[in-house]
Image (cartoon, rainbow, N blue to C red; front, side, top):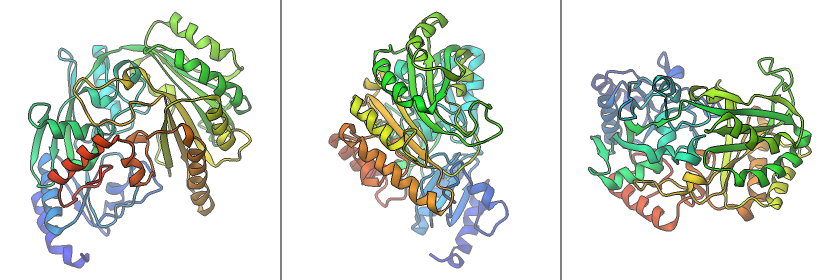
Length: 456
């Protein structure tokens, strides 16, 4: 459909919604379509700045009538394509938030980020099952599973969803829970945006006012000793403890501590829900491996959980991939070091190994479609494809890293799939789950209005 043939229908759409409806030449377009990942510049045919469920439903109905696909974006952290010729629904204005401290439950609009939930829950001693960065949107993170520092004790964020609102491909707004539509309730919690646009979500909170943890940075030359020590140490930790270890190539950014600027480092991440004494005793074996450049572990309120990973907060170009490993033997660590260690000349700026297991390995109390529960360790890598050479080298070296650990790999986590091919992501689910998801996709979205990881 040409842009000129869209003029009249777009005017009709604009009259039907309260939020802005913009085309590429309209003022405010770049701000409306922009997101965290600057490697992709979204080029939809139309963007709708939804203010609520009514706007989302109108946008979906309009897109279906034009024979166009629909994509949804809150923060753009999960953006992996340019969204050519689609209708982009921006949910960033949908920021309603309520916390019920008695029921230990929160309800959020589709545009809410974890920082808002953390701040609203903290006065009640409660915590959401957020991830490593509070700047990420709640809904996209949760519908993709949601792996965070509370996961080994409480499972995936999707396991705690009690109900949600969704606009399906017929343009109808529905409230879904385990009783009203158990198949859709099962599928959206793990299948992300494949079945519609989630407009609001309700989920449980846990009692967690504080933790003992943070990050410890070591010189990158210590990577072989540290990664092998972590491999032996981490599996023995209890469910109250979460950890990851990352190889980081840090820029010479003056905002970074002087000890870290422009260095290749190893970053040990640690979160313990028990006492300070317990946490210090658990961490002692890793502290003994090498002298730290910077030790940031201590007693913190849960709302300060960003301090553990210290993820970037400003938009940046990102090319990423992930995988789940069934086991992490010494040979697997050696493979990671060969491809991404201090002597590898890798352009990847982050390679992380994260401990899974515990409650992450157990079925959800109300079954859902979250992939990756079988894994022992998550591997995730990220590069910055800035410039023609990096745009080639980053994907090539990420692919080489994943090939190197392929003997121990089985599937992955949907939220950490990054630039994985659709067939690869489809393989994250076992055969029965994949077939059930595909059958539901054909039932609720027979024309393929929505993208997402599930294939019909």
